[in-house]
Length: 449
Image (tube, rainbow, N blue to C red; front, side, top):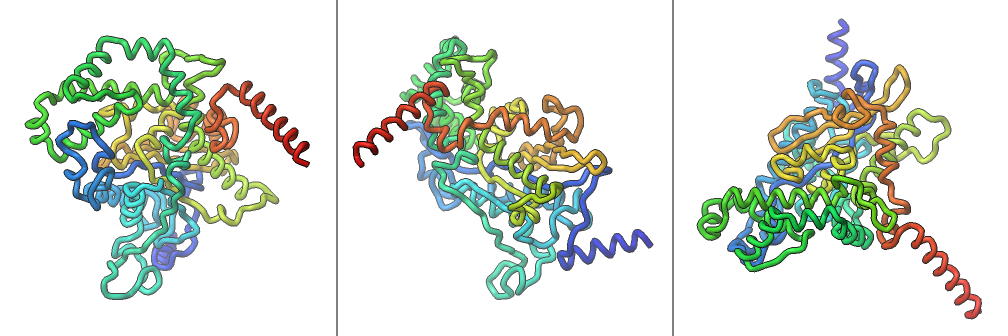
């Protein structure tokens, strides 16, 4: 009788989108999910001058640089189906957490303002909620009209200005990041690495072969283009670029991997310049905004659920699922913040297409404490892997939320990020300059009046 009742309740929920019973794993109850993913397969965003495959070689996805390919769309369709199988209340998913039919109060999808991330998000939602047979109703969830794909439920994808998106775009306009990066390149460690024989050899050989030089921050253009060209034009690539070999390509990738690590403040030893821990400061402007955006939302969800007299809860009470549709560096920023960058290094130093890192917020009903579980989807075709116990301070699948809070606190920019990005001096110098500026403004206004 109990089994029949459970089946009937799940069936009724599946058909009518009724309230879903709490999702529990023993004494743990799932409360919220954050997903940070990389877009799918794309064309190069640019290339080196002598590359035989220039912009007109790329015709898919509307054509041109940086466009999502049909393969990339399919990768996110598949990831969306995997996420559905994990979280959507179908009766046989891992966690019957989200409603079977799309409910706008339960989820929010944020994308960077770039075609490939926006279309990846749409493709993902198509896999998660847009298939015929998912339980959606014609005339209610989508038009009951000829020409409309049966079962396709359009889900809004939100975005912000790309250049000022410090959460999703790790290359947003941020003078402080550039200032810190310039300091980092003057460190003994980076100068020794740059002048080492293996690195010098790669740069010199590449310059001689293609007649072009690169700064460290632009070097990624070469391995990125070559990686994609091996997918689409492998034979022609090797015919037209006789210098291209697998061995030389791997040398280029190894150099680029190390540049990535330095850009995210990963040094062999602490680098201190102008009384600043350069590695920590780089992480503050790269990983800090995203990590704090997530933890702030989790803490608000917790407060609105378990604290009395908490205000401003209407928007988050129903919210269960929050997505960041972004880039390899966005996923990388989460992994680096948690000390897990090594899992992105192989086979390349950056997360692969449709890689996704998932932060699940759980509540322990026995001790009334908050916990999190970290799950990673490495690439298209892979299953989800729980990686929480790889994080320092975590020794099992569930880890106390305090650990995540401490990471976010450590990486929190000293001011709101749009202001902090304008600070190109140490904190002490900045305070003096701001005080002096305020003094000048007061004097100016006094004489003006």
